[in-house]
Structure formats: C-alpha cells, structure tokens
Amino acid sequence: MAIKQCLAIGKLSRNTMPASHLNLDPKKLLYLASIIESGSLKSAAKALEISQPALSTSMSRLEAELGLQILLRGPTGVTPTPIGEVLYGHARLVRDAIELAERALLNVNGDHPLSIRIGSLPSLASTVMPMALSRWREAHADRDLQVVEAPQIDLLIGLLRGEFDFVFGFTECYDLEDGLRQRVLFRDKLLVIARSEHPLSTAKNLSWETLVRYPWVAPTARRAHAILAAALKIAKLAPPERVTVCGSVTLLKSLVIDSDHLAVLPAHAVRSELADGRLCGLAITDPALDRNIAVFFRDGYHLDGHSRDLVKFVEAVGQELCRRPEAGPAEQASLQEATRLECPRPRKVSQGDRP
Image (cartoon, rainbow, N blue to C red; front, side):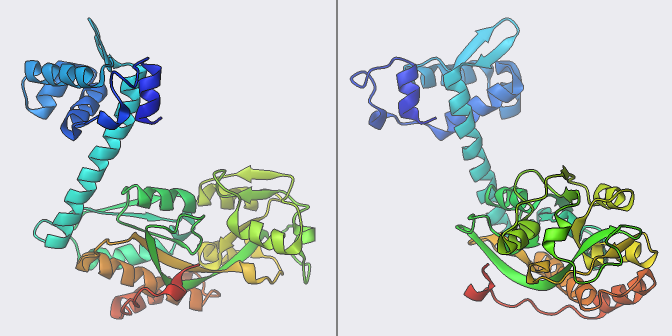
C-alpha cells in the first residue's frame, strides 16, 4: 500500500501533511524493522547497540513526522499498527537493498570472500549438481557455499530479490527478464517417463492426445508445467484432468514407479532407474522435450573467480551427461573424472542466449 493510502487510512488531511512533504529517514525504518522483529524496544536496542531511550525517541519522532501511530506499546511488548505493518514491509526492502549493496562491494573488492548462494532446479540435483559441486569443492575447500533447490519461478524471483547470487534453470523467464541475464550452458534431453509395466511402455509413436488421458505428476503448483504446457498448446490439447503436484524429484519418481502416473524429467535424472528397469522412457518425439539449461544472474552482478569456476563445472558436467543419455550408473566414475580434467571457458552473454 502506498504512503498516500496510508495517510488516508490515518485520516490525515493533505493540508496537514501532504504526501509530497514526507521525508522518511531510512535509518528510522531500519530501527522500526528491528523493533517489530524483536517484539520489544529493549531487545531491539541491544541488537542495534544503542540505548533504549534513544531508540524510543527515534520512533516517537518518526510518528510525529508522519502524524500517525506506528507502534502499540504494552506491558507484553511492542506490536505494529496497520500503518506500522506497511512501513515494516518497506523497511525490509531497504534493509535487503543495503545488504545486497554490501555483498556486491565486498564481492568486487575481493578482500573478504562471502558465502556463495546459488539456486538450482530440483531436476538437476540428482546428477549434474552433485558431480559439479564435488569437483568444485576439491578446488575450493575453504569457500562457503549455500545451495537451494526450487522451481524455476521461485529461483528467478529469489534472484531478483537478492536471495541468490546466481541460479541454474532453463531458459524460461516468465516475463521476469528485466534485470536478469543468462548464458546457456548445455542442452537438456527430457523424457516422458513411466513405470516399466505401464500400459504404454511398449507402445510406438505415441501422441500427446494419448498421454494426457493418464494421470500426471507436476513439479510445482506455482505455475503450469512449462514443458508439458508448451507441448499441449502446440497440439491444441487441454491439460491432463488428473494432476498430482510434487516438488520433490525423489517422491515424483517413486510415485511414477508405483502407479500409472506419467511425468517429464531429464534423462540424466532417471539414468539409474532406466538402467535397473524401474522406469522407461515412452516413445514420443517432440521439440518441446529439448530445453536449454542456463545460468542466470542479475544485471551488474560480478562473478568472482570461485563463482566462475562453479559455473564452468556445472557446464562441463551437464554437457557430458547430456551428450551420452544412454550411460548407466557404472559410467558415473568416468564422467566425474572427465569433469576433473577439463572445464570449458564460459561464453560471453549474448542476445542470442535469451529465450
């Protein structure tokens, strides 16, 4: 809600305090965030390393400047008013922006290497990411790394918010490309998977019209299954009527193995299940089942040497695995050794790398 609307809620007339005359002090907003999160002036003052009277005076001045009450003080602590909740939301954005700026400056300077925070598609987490991270960790044993698995839309939103330094996903931006850059790393081969005894396991030249008659497992409820939706749109078919949403790749594969559900996963994510006969790839050919995996980062973000190495390892492993989708578990060791020996230099970002 905008400040102008806050003034209306507080029944403050334009003649008393025009919105254009507001001059919010960012420091006071940060103080407010700390008070609301700690629940008391005493705890917030201790965390901020200032005196409690000084903090209380700062909040009183903020309320006086706005002509609105933002905090309710009681015997059990401090709680925000509706206006305080609005300001708190903006205070968090201010704090996040400051922290992001501090991280960016430290990252560029290079004197104080920070923990690298990355996001990854769950479908990359069973093979590509573990192999790449293992090789990277051997070269950078002392650098802290945080990895989060999330659906594509959550990865991109988190990246824009500064929750990640960079993320690995497929080249679909959901209209979020402003402020983002991407570079394609490798081409992912997707399979429509089913249990080996599925009624369609031996069928030839399958069509989407046949496949949508069966129940499906989708990876997320936040957005439609991008790959399936694209294929069905071209085929002019409605989505499957029976869809189970499952954010875990492990649970997704188990559900497909134990039922007649179908799903779409990269070939490298199901290589062991294909090799031991628990899953099979159905006989359908569609350009939608090929997708580009890319690294995404914000405009202006500077990848340090450790980060560039991590991207190179992911690129090398992805290219090796997707070049030989028929490889079984016994070949994993040789693939890992290949990534150890050579990591291709990343290409420069170009307009052609955009979706």
